[in-house]
Image (cartoon, rainbow, N blue to C red; front, side):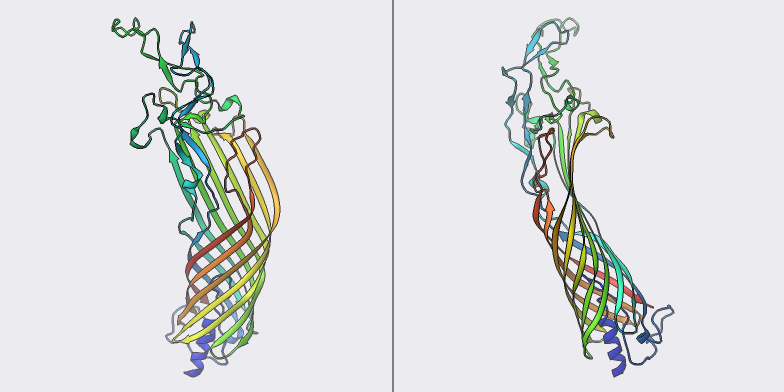
Length: 431
């Protein structure tokens, strides 16, 4: 029984082939005793000391840093671009009430939408980790794995319905204004966004609408620009993470209940984020369309190519249970693709403006994993653990919007520290 316990200790201690997170490998033994109980599966070998194939899968759930900062997106109100507009018959000009100059802001200017509404620490993002490897007779092993997190989304919106339905006497609070400028006329929005009093209306005239004109008439051209007098504006922030490892593990020091191993190999990490902003206009009849919707996106893709190295400490506790602690460092060449873009929601039709750039920066990474390993039967191993990753000097765009359409150049920072932390639960099969 003593030999069998030692075999199980090394079987469990070798679970940490991958980093960060638990890893799996075949155990070693001086001799062999049949598994108890014997399961009807093609698992494990009568000669575990010879090594062989292993594979594993994990469910993971992580949090990650959201690098956004406060930036005003939209205010309550609108800007009058033309204080006089033609009447429907084009026979005379009608004055917009209370406005004498173009560029007059009408409304409270109260904040309606800010980037900080999608900032802060993201919630838990589920994902998976899968891998396969081979253990050699010498006790070393090599493995490859993939960690993927499902896209995390945070969104916010402002609409034509302010808090308490306080739209104001002139309904100015039901409109949204964003200070986008230097854009072409294709982004002008619907011609009729507001109405003005009809000077030909007679309050006590005949009831026939043909004889008695309506009290209000559309004001074409009075409010110009999709972002000026918008009815709906939404923002969304999306994050994605993938990591690929090729890991070689070499035992360095071992006793009956403890093993120290070295880890080394290439690594690819991909941190991707997108900030998306959509502004939608409605005309006076409540109609809209793709030509009256403007899209703005800011993408930052950190593709990190490098290598990782570290140490794994494994301690057998007894009864098929072991504890694993790993610490690693990595150094990357971060190939960063930055892309900001304005476009209409017409599927590629209409003018657009974008700015794209690629930069390369060095990025170090440090991560640590604490795990608990359990082998209910020989050939099957269960792992649960907690992992922390820290990436230094990555690129982000904390204030992602440049309101100058014609000179699109949002600010990108090259000193962002990103933290990931999360849990994993997985199982390994040793053949």
